[in-house]
Length: 254
Ligand SMILES: [Zn+2]
Image (tube, rainbow, N blue to C red; front, side, top):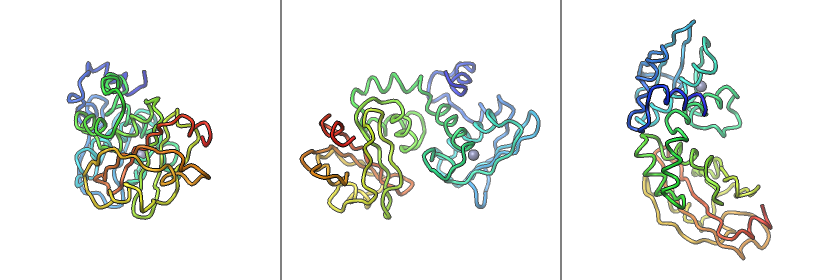
């Protein structure tokens, strides 16, 4: 069990609605203050055994919780130090520009607000993972759909790839462990349902079958179809769940 999960167990927390990040901060001698912050998303000022955490108060509730948890990650792993965290440092563990300390804090945050030991039984009862299921888990845990989707991708063995786009193209992708080395195109295909999802804020589309060529720039890949489900998130990105039906696609191109 990882440190954040161990802390939850120590506190006797087993229900997502009891994961109160402010109370948890208090327990570890960190005080949280939600206030206006310019140029950063959150920060921690640590001194000896006490810390003060500032979180941008105008951020959405789910985002504030994750930011507080991220600073608690710094407090656990980098005790006594101070950090100023940019928006792209928090909830973006795949941002190559992020420093290693930020990834460590982010992993702690994800373990605290989306602890694997609580997610696992929910994933099992979902059967196949889908964006619908992820939206429901996000609701139960008061987390963003993106953070929840990344957590699920770290755990699932299904052949799916999570992709995030904005108007300029692919932002990042997270392939499931069984999706091999497949990498989706860096642009967004205007025939793909992801392109149309750009305009539908907060809307969750139905899963759709599409030619694999809409997603992968590889020779003759259009002999295969993939299943795609999209949602435009509060952050203004479209996240897509690309499911590979045919194991042969991974064998040939993965
Ligand atoms: Zn940080």
